[in-house]
Length: 118
Image 1 (cartoon, rainbow, N blue to C red):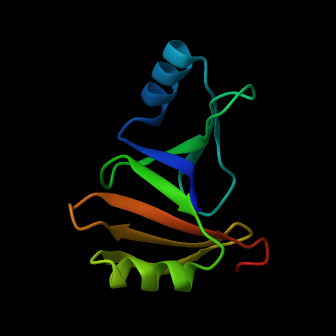
Image 2: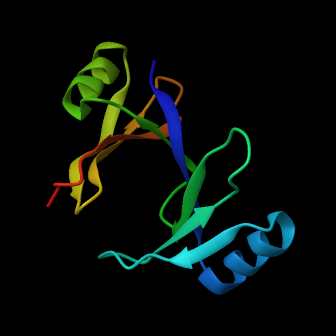
């Protein structure tokens, strides 16, 4: 069974957004050193929950589902009536990612972890 492993919140002003989430939820937010403007969000260490990120505004809040095989998951989405809206892409040292949409129009991400991704 695949699980939601990450969320992304679209933002316009990184400092304002980070200050808000730190103040409201006491989240730890740090700028990512990767190849894009992105802020990693740690929501806690106790109990169930997931961490996420803040990214420059480009769409709605997105949940990402971890999968063993991105290619198989993409095929399953298409076979079930969904569609791929952003094709498979590499996130260096993290893995492979795609954005999909369910038949109701809801956007979600798929992530295959792979530290060797380039």
